[in-house]
Each structure stands twice: as structure tokens, then as C-alpha cells.
Image (tube, rainbow, N blue to C red; front, side, top):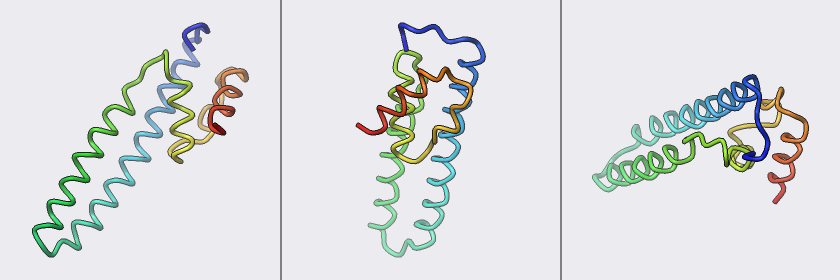
Length: 106
């Protein structure tokens, strides 16, 4: 990524894809928290939910810190995790999509 200069359009697509993945993951987290919160019976259940939220906040804050030098690897990870798919990256150079596709299989 650092060797290849991205056009403004590609940069916009990349940032939009990051936002799409972020929205998908955070929406899933919110739904999960709602389900878990509804089943809290004991204090330990509450602390477990707190621990989950603390962990997820740390993970999500780091994962969605857009860095142009690592974005190809970040996209591959997001695809592996199910938050993105290659169709979300339409408009990027075919070589870039190919690199991401290869990385998803590693």
C-alpha cells in the first residue's frame, strides 16, 4: 500500500469500507449486549458484561484506526472476520483487490 499511491476515489472507497465494517461490527455488538443485558441475574453476569465491553472497546478502537500503510492487511482481516466482503471494495484497483483476496486465504 505504501508503494502504491491511491487516487482520491480509492481513498474514499477505502474509508467508506472501513466505516461499513465498523457499522456492521458495532451493530452486532449492540445487539449482543442487549441480549446479554436482558439475561443478567447475578452480579457476576454484570461484571462479565463489563469485561466484554472493555475488551471490545479496546479491540474496536485499535482495529478501526485507519492507517493507509496497513489498510490492505486490515481489509483482509475484516473480510476474514466477516465484517467486509470483496464487493465492499469495488472501485479499488484490481491488483489491490487481488492482494487482499490472497491475504484472506492466509
